[in-house]
Length: 301
Image (cartoon, rainbow, N blue to C red; front, side, top):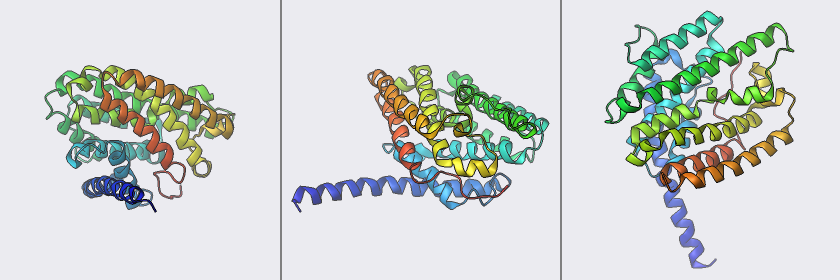
């Protein structure tokens, strides 16, 4: 074996080990959050493997960050998990869904959540950490809008599932479903991370980054659907493969959209190179991860 192969292997493993240590520290923080809000995280499906996967994701997408700099992204990802579970699995009526949305939007606006509302309290904790940054007052409306968009999209999907339960012909079109990808939550996490760690370049170009993140988010929605189809069939969740589009067509969409996003990110790179790279790595890591598994553990409903 040539010497440079050994040296390259050592160097690669050293960097991978460093990133994995960031993930390990992130996972420990997530375990503490689960312990602090026990009502939000049933086990299964929110098990240690899922917490590890969330922490690995943020660490490998932004490996130039410290563990402290990744804390908000990790916690925002965990909050999306809790919110998704609350609306998709725990809510039994539209009134319950709308009450959850209202409480979370009030928390995003700065209100103190009601005692016992752990989901709103967890969101308020994230809000309060973001509020320690000098820029938050100027960008809070953008952050709040991401909370609203995600909750609105989850409510829309809840309505679709309820309509389908009454009549299995009542399904959205594939285009409508993909346009609702804000319920995936990636852009909310990204915006939270950018505010928490934002340089002047990042904050000055936040609207352009958010627009690019929405394009990335649709790719993540599709690769998630390819990975989770069998589970979604059992659980009753919606999936793009249920909407008259076959696997090969979705795989082609993913390929085409990745190419389009690469062009979009090439244009963003001169303006905010670190965050353009962040979005590129988000596509790469998530697509690779979903080749073998997804984030949720096994569960019965």
